[in-house]
Image (cartoon, rainbow, N blue to C red; front, side):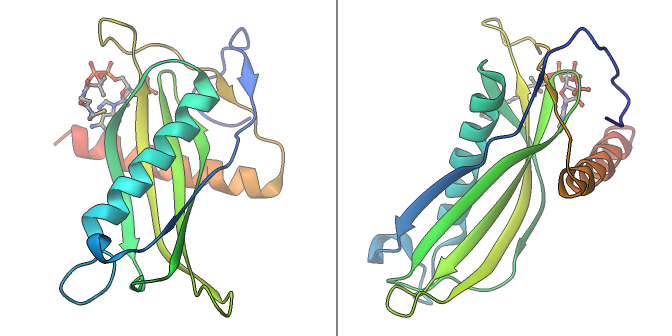
Length: 162
Ligand SMILES: CC(C)(COP(=O)(O)OP(=O)(O)OC[C@H]1O[C@@H](n2cnc3c(N)ncnc32)[C@H](O)[C@@H]1OP(=O)(O)O)[C@@H](O)C(=O)NCCC(=O)NCCS
């Protein structure tokens, strides 16, 4: 696996995809009759947090959200599906990719409507960062995801240096 952390004593683990499905009801929408962005973000955060938790089986906190693109609106009455999986690990942090799919309930037509990345840091019971397992990267798709994670880490480090 590529990356700056090469400690072979740390256990490696494969990413597990977490899928959350909801029906968009009137209380979930904005004045345009489409899903309220804050509710989309909450769905993304919860689903992504479960994928980070299942990956490391330790306490996690959200450290940042990165590159969230609301590509197309989600309509009232549609089925909304969040898919999240860990794409990159540092020493104590995990980068999770989240895709939001919109599905027309009668036709089954689906569209990728929102994408984003959430960073979680594992913490101990005092809130101090705690080491996580390393992500096991095997396939070309996983390698491409990992490279995207490296770019996101570089963006975070550049921002923190300001
Ligand atoms: C996230 C948090 C634990 C990091 O603590 P810290 O003392 O700044 O940690 P460090 O500087 O030692 O960095 C630890 C890891 O966090 C990452 N990190 C820190 N701040 C970050 C940020 N703003 N965005 C992304 N990653 C960040 C570092 O890159 C590092 O990752 P690595 O170990 O994989 O290299 C701390 O900032 C925090 O508790 N924030 C509040 C979290 C919260 O309340 N979330 C909302 C509700 S869950």
